[in-house]
Length: 162
Image (cartoon, rainbow, N blue to C red; front, top):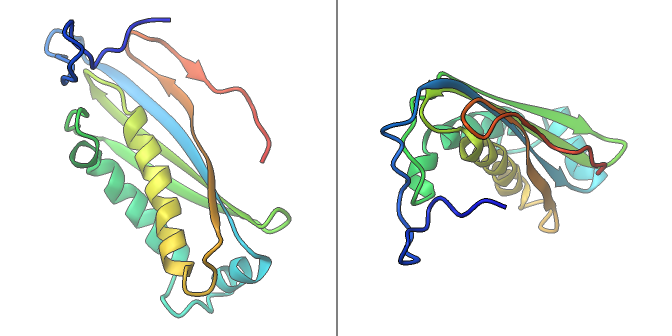
């Protein structure tokens, strides 16, 4: 196991100095799931939700969150993202909504936190928009699926089932 990069010799948290790192193309994908009652999912899919298009709102929230990750997580660098995608897939057979995010840039540091933030905030937005009809929804399995570019190389998560 390697050491924590955000901790200095005195054990203090610090932002990593990336000024000497080479710029490379970096990409990361993350996912999250929202488990809900069949009736809640049907309300979303049928467009009957009184707050409007839940998936469109969650998609935009995820994109916005990726762009503002550096303001939410103290030691993240502000990044010039070149691509952010958020997709939402209903899984009625499992009473789930699957959220997948993709973030990309050419830069000196990775975009894993931006991808995770995008997926997580999209899930939180679904919860926020639907909490009036169901308070016991569960956000689960928020994780990094893949990252490539940079010194640490290519990572692909092991498959899991929800």
